[in-house]
Image (cartoon, rainbow, N blue to C red):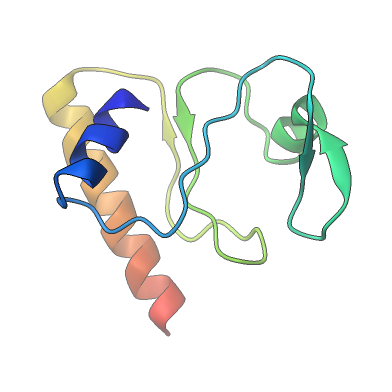
Length: 93
């Protein structure tokens, strides 16, 4: 999250919306407007480990391959930029 927030603040990323979810059981609003627990939301997408980054469209569809786990900052950044680019292209079609 810190890496994304820093890049966004520097103008290096054009993110429409970035949401960090914690494993704590709290209520959020899903893409259908329903109130669900974060656990239910994460289960819906099969998220089992942190960090996991999903690139989601406005209807909740995955627009790019998700990032699961962390290797090194260089590789993570490369895959993150690739995922953002792919999801941006997908949502523009």
